Length: 75
Image (cartoon, rainbow, N blue to C red; front, side, top):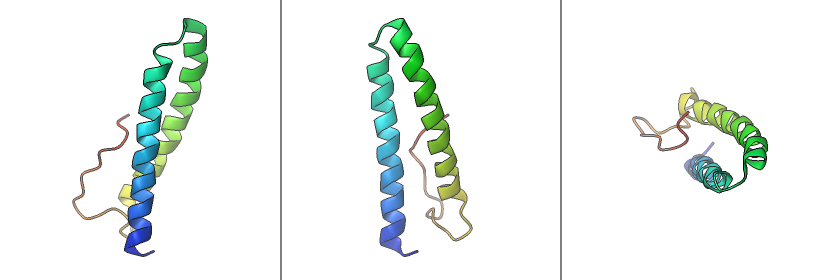
Protein backbone atom coordinates (compact mmCIF):
# COMPACT_ATOMS: atom_id res chain seq x y z
CA UNK A 1 0.00 0.00 0.00
CA UNK A 2 1.42 3.39 -0.91
CA UNK A 3 1.40 6.59 1.14
CA UNK A 4 -1.58 8.22 -0.63
CA UNK A 5 -3.70 5.13 0.09
CA UNK A 6 -2.60 5.14 3.72
CA UNK A 7 -3.42 8.84 4.03
CA UNK A 8 -6.85 8.24 2.46
CA UNK A 9 -7.63 5.46 4.93
CA UNK A 10 -6.67 7.72 7.84
CA UNK A 11 -8.77 10.54 6.42
CA UNK A 12 -11.80 8.26 6.03
CA UNK A 13 -11.45 6.97 9.58
CA UNK A 14 -11.34 10.53 10.91
CA UNK A 15 -14.36 11.53 8.81
CA UNK A 16 -16.30 8.55 10.13
CA UNK A 17 -15.40 9.51 13.69
CA UNK A 18 -16.61 13.06 13.10
CA UNK A 19 -19.86 11.78 11.60
CA UNK A 20 -20.52 9.61 14.65
CA UNK A 21 -19.82 12.55 16.95
CA UNK A 22 -22.30 14.68 14.99
CA UNK A 23 -24.90 11.90 15.11
CA UNK A 24 -24.49 11.67 18.89
CA UNK A 25 -25.08 15.41 19.21
CA UNK A 26 -28.24 15.13 17.12
CA UNK A 27 -29.33 12.08 19.09
CA UNK A 28 -29.17 14.11 22.30
CA UNK A 29 -31.94 16.36 20.95
CA UNK A 30 -34.40 13.50 20.31
CA UNK A 31 -37.10 12.24 22.64
CA UNK A 32 -36.25 9.39 24.98
CA UNK A 33 -37.63 6.52 22.88
CA UNK A 34 -35.98 7.66 19.66
CA UNK A 35 -32.75 8.42 21.51
CA UNK A 36 -32.57 4.88 22.89
CA UNK A 37 -33.10 3.30 19.46
CA UNK A 38 -30.47 5.43 17.76
CA UNK A 39 -28.00 5.13 20.64
CA UNK A 40 -27.90 1.35 20.22
CA UNK A 41 -27.07 1.65 16.53
CA UNK A 42 -24.47 4.35 17.17
CA UNK A 43 -22.80 2.17 19.81
CA UNK A 44 -22.56 -0.73 17.35
CA UNK A 45 -21.11 1.51 14.65
CA UNK A 46 -18.69 3.06 17.13
CA UNK A 47 -17.46 -0.38 18.16
CA UNK A 48 -16.82 -1.35 14.54
CA UNK A 49 -15.01 1.92 13.86
CA UNK A 50 -12.91 1.50 16.98
CA UNK A 51 -11.88 -1.95 15.72
CA UNK A 52 -10.87 -0.48 12.34
CA UNK A 53 -8.87 2.25 14.09
CA UNK A 54 -7.03 -0.38 16.12
CA UNK A 55 -6.19 -2.26 12.92
CA UNK A 56 -4.92 0.95 11.38
CA UNK A 57 -2.72 1.74 14.36
CA UNK A 58 -1.35 -1.77 14.86
CA UNK A 59 -0.90 -2.94 11.30
CA UNK A 60 2.50 -4.61 11.09
CA UNK A 61 2.87 -3.25 7.56
CA UNK A 62 3.15 0.22 9.03
CA UNK A 63 -0.19 1.73 8.05
CA UNK A 64 -0.02 4.06 11.02
CA UNK A 65 2.73 6.61 10.95
CA UNK A 66 5.49 6.01 13.47
CA UNK A 67 4.72 7.90 16.70
CA UNK A 68 1.56 9.42 15.20
CA UNK A 69 -1.03 10.71 17.61
CA UNK A 70 -4.49 9.37 16.81
CA UNK A 71 -7.24 11.93 17.35
CA UNK A 72 -10.10 9.63 16.45
CA UNK A 73 -12.84 8.01 18.42
CA UNK A 74 -12.22 7.57 22.12
CA UNK A 75 -14.08 4.66 23.65
